[in-house]
Length: 256
Image (tube, rainbow, N blue to C red; front, top):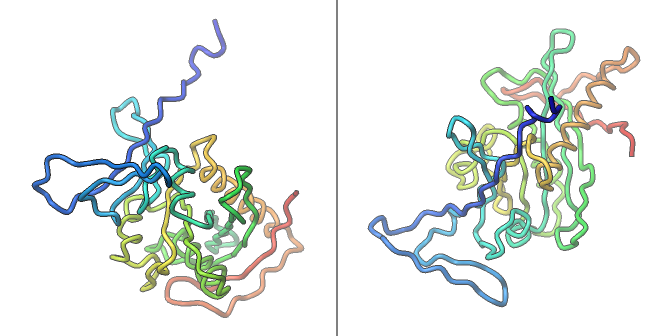
């Protein structure tokens, strides 16, 4: 019997633009392509509702979404990275892992970023790692992690204005509302004007945004291993709020 007989095959991926039109009675749309810029536009479409979704159909017939990127501008070439380059200057991926240690809920948030989206040889570099303590049960620790990176690595850095895409692997059903600033991403905080969330599933392979999420996950796991060592003493944070008991910035000791 072949060893690969029961090995699951990679299902065909579907890439589709999703966009809402301003006129609910509209029955036909006109699609235009700017030959110079490569931008695709749909007459009557609401640019703020556009997104590129990559998915496949599961055995159950349901759609499994692997990535989702907002697209105020749509690339006629399709492709996730083609659209990301058309809409963003910088990518940041954020992932949070949570475990119980000595009776405390400990969350490790790690972020990676791309120094440039222009180069065809993309690479991601470590941006930051954070330890947060005892996030309340009603709040997803991932959203606390987003806030730490946005607050300390984006807002307080005061870098030149750039369009920043933040890749996350959580809260897929809320991302549209958060991007439209209809709901806060953490506490009463709305996303900064130059920031939008993208979704990338860690289970997908061969996609740069998904690989960035995997890098974050790997480093967060390494940080957990470091702080579990008997010689590692966690300082007591003094920056708690109603949602958690404080956070600390850490420098991961991971192989190059």
